[in-house]
Image 1 (cartoon, rainbow, N blue to C red):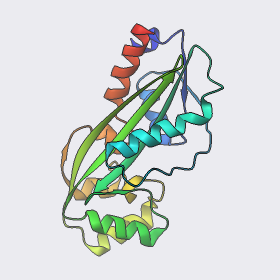
Image 2 (tube, one colour; image 1 turned 180 degrees about the vertical axis):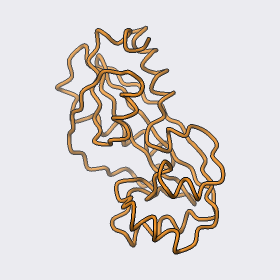
Image 3 (cartoon, rainbow, N blue to C red; image 1 turned 90 degrees about the horizontal axis):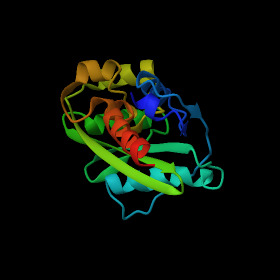
Length: 197
């Protein structure tokens, strides 16, 4: 399947996220991990997928001069978009509580962009999933924050964890996108690149 088509390519994933590592393994994609520090700052006028497109591309910039002809670099960014603003990763437990409290009893969007850099080209794709939480009690939120320490997650929650099991009442779009990577979109895009590169 896809891995056979990618035999002549070296897939590089620029992400420390264990969830993204797991997804590529599940997709039977052979890859290596390379990390470069990037200050994730974006222009204030950007909204929704414009933000994630910008940041996914920004994360590829440190690799520009080191990529070989057979390399495909995967960079990505995920935000929670709610009430016309981006919610990133919490600074501490109090911030995590505040973030989840703001998502309680509402619907928000999870937006992910993937940037694929190869042969001096770039392809950026994105998708949005709508997620609805029930009205969460303060005790439920604190239980989750204290026991699951979601400080590495956009919006301060992991849909695959306890809070998702007890709190999410509706989801429209890709579940994997909310976990951290829209795998269907990555698969389609890598297929296209493998067939046309």
